[in-house]
Length: 347
Image (cartoon, rainbow, N blue to C red):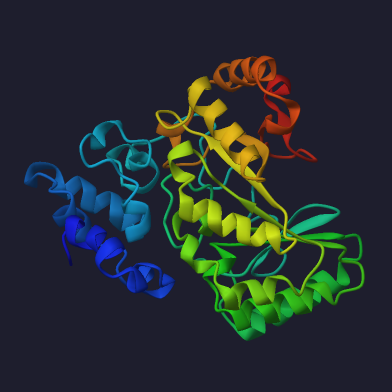
């Protein structure tokens, strides 16, 4: 494993490698040994980090590592989203659950989550370019949740075909843009050919954590399908780099609308000045500030959750200081509801 300085040096010394998304994946930090070595974790706590990573695997691209401020890593908002934390394996209490929304319960066939009558989620992979530490599916991905075979994929298509009330399909995972372009094309083509499917959405963090994946081959596939909406997740202004903005701009200029669904994270963006900067920077770059989600009550993410009052007060302050096109809706996803609930209405 290269040192952190060596990895980051590739950005200027070998840009042809740095801008190759497959190189980014190959050189990602993806093991406890790499993490411990790269960040110089002390021996007396190394065993705890190994335990965390065994339960919740690590993957961080060199690109995303380059966003870390090496001079003051403890204060960097990127760190909490990508580095393992001992708090992830502390016992949670109360409403914190491994699968709080019963996604597995609402899975009639592998790869399909059908919680709402008119829309469903198609989990096409359980792989991501980066394993976000606040991921809502960190306890359920793997096994037989996402699609793992052509046979399962065909059964998922058949289920959507039979579910005639479904007008909208969200392609998710994992991250769908981790698939090879031809495989993604096959999936989008099959879903869009179902008569009652009117709209497709792709949920992805690729523009944030590995923007070089938005290449010619991928764009050629995505532009074949309309209406196709891209939802991504920038959580902090530092993530809106020139490369990330260029990746989103490329999609937008091809006619693919890009919306942002941030997550409210303690120690990352639970500050109204930070959130305001994020929202206006998104709007300035034609990325719609769509939602800010209350962090889900998922085992292993409790240390990220803020009080409801934080999001409510932030939204009220933002409403007074920025225009409506830059103002996202602050919402929570709750079990047994028909849609996202405004934080002010959460009981």
